[in-house]
Length: 123
Image (cartoon, rainbow, N blue to C red; front, top):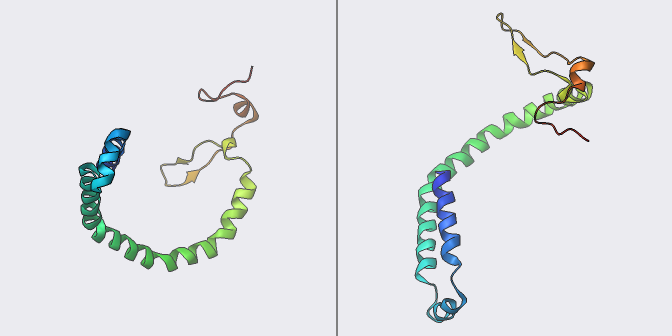
């Protein structure tokens, strides 16, 4: 659906970039056919998407109390953890062991000194 909306927006942008001499005639008659077609298209999309948007609003309304409680309880603990971590690039990605434990290994000073392939080297 996002691709369809992006393609529609692109087509609308191209259609609305009409030459200046054509805009004078269209201004006298009201909306051009392209503008009218685009308006009708977007009204149709809005009507088609209305039920999905209402469901999303309802879901957000249902999840809001739980999310507020989670942030209130876990927010200070997460802030404390982030304060202890300092810089996340000092750690390897998390690994899951066969027994289900998750470990996060800290990089050694030698590993931290080696630049990664995607990092730029200052010369």
